Image 1 (tube, helix red, strand yellow):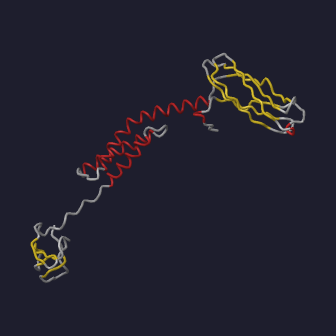
Image 2 (spheres, helix red, strand yellow; image 1 turned 90 degrees about the vertical axis):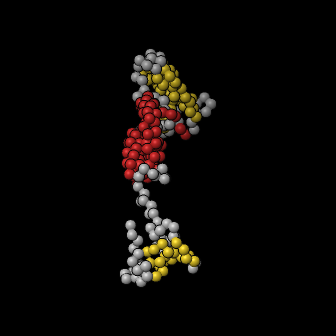
Length: 246
């Protein structure tokens, strides 16, 4: 490529060096020459008159490959996010390979890193599948406890020392596999107080029964001498990972 000269019709003279390597370069009226000067000292440019090499524009596909590869590697192993991880991993490989074919020498290494991370993310998705199945299993056990029968056997206020509400009951596992239960009972006293009581019952074998019981202190204003009313409002399995999702 020939360097553009000074403005139209320039005379042969010294002009600022268009290559930037020296202060001035001599233009002979037709083309730039290798005669140069710096600080008033003349010399000959050993590189000739070719302009400095222009760095090729960066390929956006290499950057996209790196970003997609990072996203893929960080999400492929996560429960429920493994599908996004696999998709990003495949795209990272595709963008990275395309970028390397277009520009084999990528000094930044973005394309190669994207391909590697995308390739790592795909087998990591197996971990994501396993964790997703485990999480869904825990949630299913919470939402669908074993078949059962339940009865409240005690719902009374004890005024012998200080007012105390006592609630007790029995739950029977009528299913064909063992399971744990989380029982919610609403108790309403004559004084207008409504109490939500929660009972956690450990694993109960098929056909077996387990008792649950709890006492709650009451204020004098919480009871007027009438019998309290208790009812089971919900029965679930154990909390998933100890977190109440409702």
